[in-house]
Image 1 (cartoon, rainbow, N blue to C red):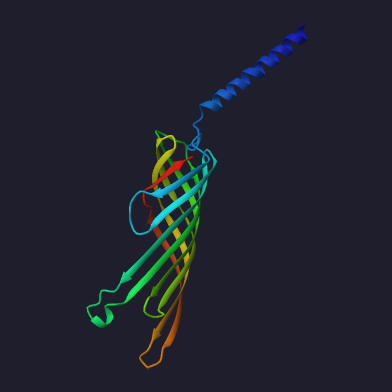
Image 2 (image 1 turned 180 degrees about the horizontal axis):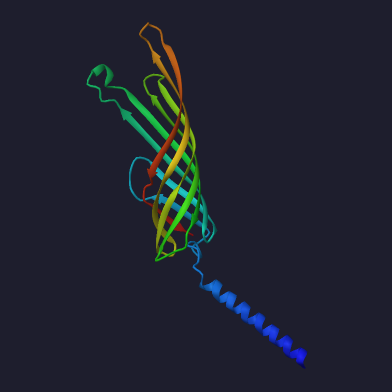
Length: 208
Protein backbone atom coordinates (compact mmCIF):
# COMPACT_ATOMS: atom_id res chain seq x y z
CA UNK A 1 0.00 0.00 0.00
CA UNK A 2 2.87 2.34 0.85
CA UNK A 3 4.48 1.66 -2.54
CA UNK A 4 1.19 2.40 -4.30
CA UNK A 5 0.85 5.68 -2.43
CA UNK A 6 4.41 6.65 -3.35
CA UNK A 7 3.77 5.93 -7.01
CA UNK A 8 0.55 7.93 -6.97
CA UNK A 9 2.37 10.83 -5.30
CA UNK A 10 5.08 10.75 -7.96
CA UNK A 11 2.55 10.66 -10.80
CA UNK A 12 0.64 13.57 -9.26
CA UNK A 13 3.85 15.61 -8.94
CA UNK A 14 4.78 14.91 -12.57
CA UNK A 15 1.29 15.93 -13.74
CA UNK A 16 1.41 19.14 -11.73
CA UNK A 17 4.88 19.95 -13.06
CA UNK A 18 3.76 19.35 -16.67
CA UNK A 19 0.71 21.54 -16.16
CA UNK A 20 2.77 24.35 -14.68
CA UNK A 21 5.27 24.13 -17.53
CA UNK A 22 2.48 24.29 -20.12
CA UNK A 23 0.88 27.27 -18.41
CA UNK A 24 4.21 29.09 -18.29
CA UNK A 25 4.77 28.39 -21.99
CA UNK A 26 1.30 29.69 -22.83
CA UNK A 27 2.00 32.89 -20.89
CA UNK A 28 5.14 33.65 -22.93
CA UNK A 29 4.69 36.28 -25.66
CA UNK A 30 4.04 34.75 -29.07
CA UNK A 31 6.05 35.64 -32.11
CA UNK A 32 4.63 38.53 -34.18
CA UNK A 33 4.01 36.27 -37.18
CA UNK A 34 1.99 33.62 -35.34
CA UNK A 35 -1.29 32.71 -37.07
CA UNK A 36 -0.96 35.39 -39.74
CA UNK A 37 -0.37 33.16 -42.73
CA UNK A 38 2.34 31.23 -44.53
CA UNK A 39 3.10 33.84 -47.22
CA UNK A 40 3.10 37.62 -47.45
CA UNK A 41 3.12 40.05 -50.39
CA UNK A 42 4.66 43.49 -49.90
CA UNK A 43 4.62 46.77 -51.81
CA UNK A 44 5.69 50.38 -51.23
CA UNK A 45 3.02 52.81 -50.05
CA UNK A 46 4.85 55.98 -51.05
CA UNK A 47 4.83 56.71 -54.77
CA UNK A 48 8.09 57.53 -56.50
CA UNK A 49 10.33 56.56 -59.37
CA UNK A 50 9.99 52.90 -60.20
CA UNK A 51 8.15 50.10 -58.46
CA UNK A 52 9.16 47.87 -55.56
CA UNK A 53 7.51 44.71 -54.33
CA UNK A 54 8.42 41.65 -52.26
CA UNK A 55 7.35 38.08 -51.56
CA UNK A 56 7.88 36.55 -48.10
CA UNK A 57 7.76 33.05 -46.66
CA UNK A 58 6.97 32.87 -42.94
CA UNK A 59 9.41 30.31 -41.54
CA UNK A 60 8.41 30.60 -37.88
CA UNK A 61 6.45 32.99 -35.62
CA UNK A 62 9.60 35.13 -35.40
CA UNK A 63 11.34 34.60 -38.75
CA UNK A 64 10.52 35.51 -42.35
CA UNK A 65 12.56 34.93 -45.51
CA UNK A 66 11.79 37.06 -48.55
CA UNK A 67 12.86 38.34 -51.94
CA UNK A 68 12.55 42.07 -52.64
CA UNK A 69 12.66 43.44 -56.18
CA UNK A 70 12.80 46.96 -57.64
CA UNK A 71 12.17 47.95 -61.25
CA UNK A 72 12.66 51.37 -62.81
CA UNK A 73 12.43 52.45 -66.45
CA UNK A 74 12.53 55.96 -67.82
CA UNK A 75 12.75 57.69 -71.19
CA UNK A 76 14.73 60.91 -70.87
CA UNK A 77 15.12 63.82 -73.27
CA UNK A 78 17.99 66.27 -73.09
CA UNK A 79 17.21 69.87 -72.25
CA UNK A 80 20.02 71.50 -74.17
CA UNK A 81 19.20 74.92 -75.65
CA UNK A 82 21.15 74.20 -78.81
CA UNK A 83 18.84 72.84 -81.53
CA UNK A 84 21.60 70.54 -82.70
CA UNK A 85 21.58 68.77 -79.33
CA UNK A 86 17.95 69.05 -78.29
CA UNK A 87 16.83 65.80 -79.94
CA UNK A 88 18.95 63.50 -77.80
CA UNK A 89 16.86 60.84 -76.09
CA UNK A 90 18.00 58.28 -73.56
CA UNK A 91 16.49 55.14 -72.10
CA UNK A 92 17.36 54.05 -68.58
CA UNK A 93 16.58 50.68 -66.98
CA UNK A 94 17.30 49.70 -63.36
CA UNK A 95 16.64 46.27 -61.86
CA UNK A 96 17.54 45.11 -58.35
CA UNK A 97 16.97 41.94 -56.30
CA UNK A 98 17.48 41.66 -52.52
CA UNK A 99 17.08 38.29 -50.72
CA UNK A 100 16.32 39.23 -47.11
CA UNK A 101 16.02 37.49 -43.74
CA UNK A 102 14.08 39.16 -40.89
CA UNK A 103 14.18 38.09 -37.24
CA UNK A 104 11.49 39.67 -35.05
CA UNK A 105 11.41 40.65 -31.41
CA UNK A 106 8.26 39.92 -29.33
CA UNK A 107 5.09 41.78 -30.26
CA UNK A 108 4.11 44.66 -27.95
CA UNK A 109 0.97 46.77 -28.46
CA UNK A 110 0.75 45.67 -32.09
CA UNK A 111 4.34 46.76 -32.85
CA UNK A 112 7.32 44.46 -33.45
CA UNK A 113 10.94 45.44 -34.04
CA UNK A 114 13.28 43.22 -36.02
CA UNK A 115 16.83 42.85 -37.25
CA UNK A 116 17.52 41.89 -40.83
CA UNK A 117 20.28 40.91 -43.20
CA UNK A 118 20.15 40.91 -46.98
CA UNK A 119 22.10 40.37 -50.15
CA UNK A 120 21.97 42.68 -53.15
CA UNK A 121 22.30 42.18 -56.89
CA UNK A 122 21.50 45.09 -59.18
CA UNK A 123 21.85 46.20 -62.77
CA UNK A 124 21.26 49.53 -64.46
CA UNK A 125 21.91 50.72 -67.97
CA UNK A 126 21.48 53.84 -70.08
CA UNK A 127 21.39 53.95 -73.87
CA UNK A 128 21.20 56.87 -76.27
CA UNK A 129 18.65 56.25 -79.01
CA UNK A 130 20.27 58.03 -81.97
CA UNK A 131 23.64 56.28 -81.70
CA UNK A 132 25.46 53.52 -79.84
CA UNK A 133 26.25 55.36 -76.59
CA UNK A 134 25.67 53.04 -73.63
CA UNK A 135 26.47 52.97 -69.93
CA UNK A 136 25.91 49.83 -67.84
CA UNK A 137 26.67 48.84 -64.27
CA UNK A 138 26.38 45.77 -62.04
CA UNK A 139 26.35 46.01 -58.23
CA UNK A 140 26.75 43.19 -55.69
CA UNK A 141 26.54 43.74 -51.96
CA UNK A 142 25.18 43.00 -48.50
CA UNK A 143 23.12 44.96 -45.98
CA UNK A 144 22.34 44.87 -42.27
CA UNK A 145 19.98 46.92 -40.12
CA UNK A 146 16.93 47.40 -37.92
CA UNK A 147 13.24 47.77 -38.72
CA UNK A 148 9.80 47.97 -37.17
CA UNK A 149 6.37 46.69 -38.28
CA UNK A 150 2.98 47.77 -37.01
CA UNK A 151 0.13 45.24 -37.22
CA UNK A 152 -3.18 47.18 -37.33
CA UNK A 153 -4.98 44.03 -38.53
CA UNK A 154 -4.32 40.31 -38.20
CA UNK A 155 -3.09 39.92 -41.79
CA UNK A 156 -1.75 43.40 -42.57
CA UNK A 157 1.40 45.18 -41.40
CA UNK A 158 2.96 48.55 -42.18
CA UNK A 159 6.57 49.44 -41.47
CA UNK A 160 9.99 50.63 -42.49
CA UNK A 161 13.65 50.13 -41.69
CA UNK A 162 17.10 51.65 -41.71
CA UNK A 163 20.55 50.19 -42.03
CA UNK A 164 23.93 50.05 -43.71
CA UNK A 165 24.83 48.47 -47.03
CA UNK A 166 28.16 47.73 -48.66
CA UNK A 167 28.35 47.04 -52.38
CA UNK A 168 30.93 46.51 -55.09
CA UNK A 169 30.12 47.95 -58.51
CA UNK A 170 31.52 47.29 -61.94
CA UNK A 171 30.65 49.73 -64.71
CA UNK A 172 31.31 49.92 -68.43
CA UNK A 173 30.59 52.67 -70.94
CA UNK A 174 30.96 53.04 -74.69
CA UNK A 175 30.79 56.25 -76.69
CA UNK A 176 30.74 56.78 -80.42
CA UNK A 177 32.27 59.80 -82.15
CA UNK A 178 32.21 60.86 -85.79
CA UNK A 179 34.39 63.96 -85.57
CA UNK A 180 37.00 62.39 -87.85
CA UNK A 181 34.44 61.45 -90.48
CA UNK A 182 34.40 57.87 -89.31
CA UNK A 183 32.49 56.35 -86.42
CA UNK A 184 34.93 55.51 -83.63
CA UNK A 185 33.90 53.73 -80.42
CA UNK A 186 35.58 54.40 -77.08
CA UNK A 187 35.28 51.96 -74.18
CA UNK A 188 35.92 52.68 -70.50
CA UNK A 189 35.44 50.71 -67.28
CA UNK A 190 35.30 51.59 -63.59
CA UNK A 191 35.12 49.72 -60.30
CA UNK A 192 33.91 51.12 -56.98
CA UNK A 193 33.28 50.03 -53.40
CA UNK A 194 30.44 51.81 -51.56
CA UNK A 195 29.30 51.99 -47.94
CA UNK A 196 25.88 53.62 -47.58
CA UNK A 197 23.35 54.36 -44.85
CA UNK A 198 19.72 54.38 -45.93
CA UNK A 199 16.11 54.59 -44.76
CA UNK A 200 13.57 52.50 -46.65
CA UNK A 201 10.19 53.59 -47.95
CA UNK A 202 7.05 52.76 -45.97
CA UNK A 203 6.04 49.22 -46.96
CA UNK A 204 2.80 47.30 -46.45
CA UNK A 205 2.63 43.51 -46.13
CA UNK A 206 -0.48 41.41 -46.74
CA UNK A 207 -0.37 37.91 -45.24
CA UNK A 208 -2.22 34.93 -46.67
